[in-house]
Image (cartoon, rainbow, N blue to C red; front, side):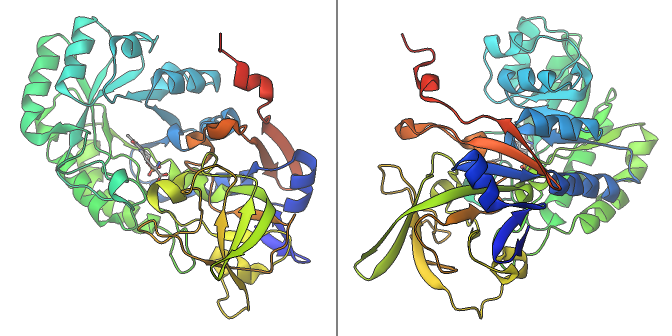
Length: 422
Ligand code: LLP
């Protein structure tokens, strides 16, 4: 992204053109950025026996799934619906892991293909697979007793989380699985999301690798996702090459000795930076000395600020300069301080917040009604967490590739609100 003549461009396409051609609110993704991130992972880990998987929960648009698949990624799915979409995007069953979380018999039956790896999260999921006589290969999701993440609600390892088989329970999990005639083909740990440094990921990997001697039939060791991305000015890129170097040092020999393949399953790292949510300014007001801007989207389309107090950099796409962007932020430019709110009937519908959730004004370049705001780094957990709360329609999505633009999901219509209602 950059500013040309004061207007934000995504690839070579003006954000204002996108807004006028496709309407707002609108998710726009830059294919070049997705490709860059795909390749960063592949290049960093190329000396390991390695297969990257994409955690499609971050963004499950079919066009994005196809892009990662064609680059050689497998797919991490967490529900039958995700498996359905992954198959639609062309992933073959042997390229899919189904990571369970409190699944039902119906969920397990809906997997539909015996080659999909079932990554069991608990003893009762193992029991279910055995009772249903599912022939699928089984992996075990381990809680390696360490967690990390950008917010307490995205930590998925350590004590007090709902994920993973405890280390103390692992032997029993293996025995129950093997006694039923299954082989444990994989070990998996995913300790959290938005992790800024490799240290906790390496410690988790170390604990996972210590378990190898207990498992004779492994093919895969899955070190999870969780690689963070910068969201605010001054935050740095996740040092992926350091992570790769340390993981290679730790794991390469052990993996090769057993002919095992390492998996990493990043979601955010692949798509976050590619996406912006474009929204039109609809209102301005001053209340108790605070300047407010209102716009035509809300937490129904980008829930991260109100759910996690997450920071998304916001620029005025109609009026700015490269110094307005997160990555080249110039704090010395004179700007307005405004609180930015959405169009939902709920007080929590505010995008500019402190990490603890408190509302906070944000510095933004001169903004007028009908200007277009860009909520940056919104490619991950943006559309995929969207709802049509307040019966606001889900936005359209477009993929920009250089100077070309393609609609990859149409905007919902009012008829969609009637769908399924009797
Ligand atoms: N693997 C498993 C088993 C996961 O549960 C997740 C994310 C990932 C991989 C991918 O994690 P990533 O590389 O994207 O950090 N909605 C939250 C993030 C929740 C992540 C849930 N699991 C947010 O907006 O920050």
